[in-house]
Length: 216
Image 1: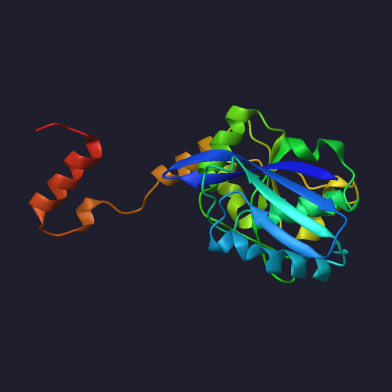
Image 2: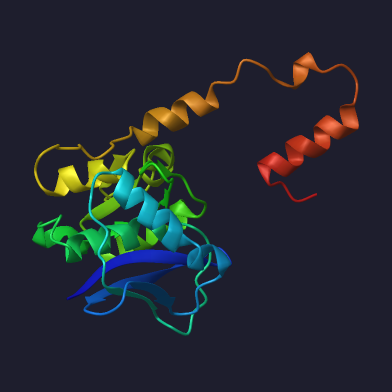
């Protein structure tokens, strides 16, 4: 059975979609990852195996092949842990939701099945908006950053089992909503200003000009 869900990789400051394809086929137990993975991605198999088992799910005793497409783009980081694990659980029948392939997944897994944050989530959220995905499944500590992008449903999770329960309808997790205008209003209210700083007039003037964008 072949399962495909969406993730992303960062190149420079831009995010590019990556199809995480998992094939579980008869054969000797083996876990192989292809598609130009770096060392962190190759090491993910040990984290994923432990995370699935410690979340009380069964890891397949078959040949598991993971393809990160497009294969001509180098894949870096630990953010593929969660989408690979979810793909395996779909292939094993632990997740039955049909619309799960319309979500974008990013997250690193701990051995106990908890999800950790990764870098580059904001560009991924912008990409998800362009792709018009149903939403993003990310760790709670990254969720606030991604929720700044309007029209993207960001579902915050803490563990792999929460993802399974959410898509199986056993535990509903509401998308995180932020009041962006309120956040910016609060950021403008700062209790200190340059009047608190004595002397350094030239330095303060230079900072004011830089902040205002004035051309001298």
